[in-house]
Image 1 (cartoon, rainbow, N blue to C red):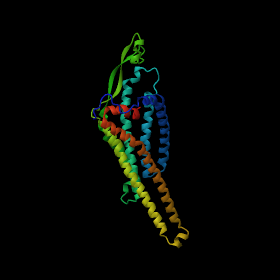
Image 2: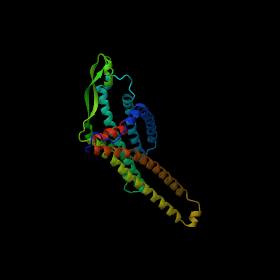
Image 3: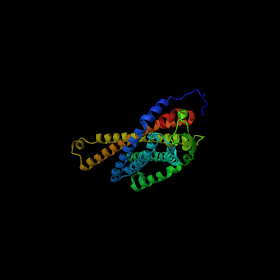
Image 4: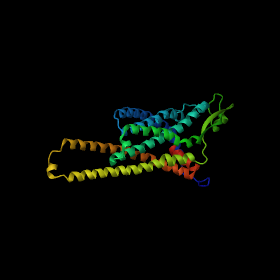
Length: 319
C-alpha cells in the first residue's frame, strides 16, 4: 500500500456524498428496487412459458436480481430513510446481523448474476457459431443443471469473504428517552446516559475482500464478457457475410424465381435468431458499461489502500 502524507487527498467528494445520501439515494434506490422487483417477476412469468436454454438462463438471472432487490428494500428503508429522532435501538444487534447478511447475500447473488451472464454469452456464442459439439448448450435439462451448479458453487467460492465482516458493540451517548445525541449537542443536556449500539465493522487487514471483489467478482467477468462479446459480434458478421455470398452466388433463374417456402421459413428463423442475439449482445454490453467502472474503482482501492477506499470508493460506491 502506498504511504502518503496526511495532507494528501485523492478525492474531495464528501459534500457530494452527503448531499446525495441525504436527498437522493434512499428514495432512488427504493424506487429502483420496487419497480425492478415487479419487472423481474413479470420476466420470470413470461420466460417460463417460452422454454429454451437461453430463456432458462434469463430466468436464473431474473431470480438472482429479484432476490437482491427484494431484500434491499428493508435495508434501504432502515439505513437511508430512518424515522427521526434516531433512537439507539435503531442500531440493535438484530439489525446488525441483518446488515451482515445483506452484505454477504448481495455479494453472492451478484457473483451468481455475473456467472450466469457469462454462461449466457457462451451459450449464445456456441449457437451463432454453429459449433456441433454443443450438446449442453442446446439441451434445456443440462442448462438447468448448469444454472443450479452455479447457484451452489458461487457461495462456496465466496466463502473467504464471510469472515471479513464482524459485529462490534460501541457506547453511544443518548438522552434519557434513548434518542442519540451528537457530540456537539451534548452541552445542551443536563442528564445523558450511555447505551450499546452494534455496528458492522470490516475485519480485513489484508484487504482480502477488496481484492476478491475487484478481481474475481468484477474485473475477471468483465474481461471474459469483453472477449465473448467480440466473438459473438465476429460470428454474426461472418454469418452475414456467408449469407450474402450464398445469395449472390445463386443463378439469375433461381434469383428471379419464387423462393421456396422452406427457404423462406429458414430465412425468417435466421433473422429472428439474429435479432435475439443482438438483443442479448446489448444486455452484455450494458453489463460491461456498469461493471467495468466498479472493477477499476475496486482494484484501485485495493492498490492504494484505506485512504482511497474512504475518500473515493465510499463516496461513489457506498453512499
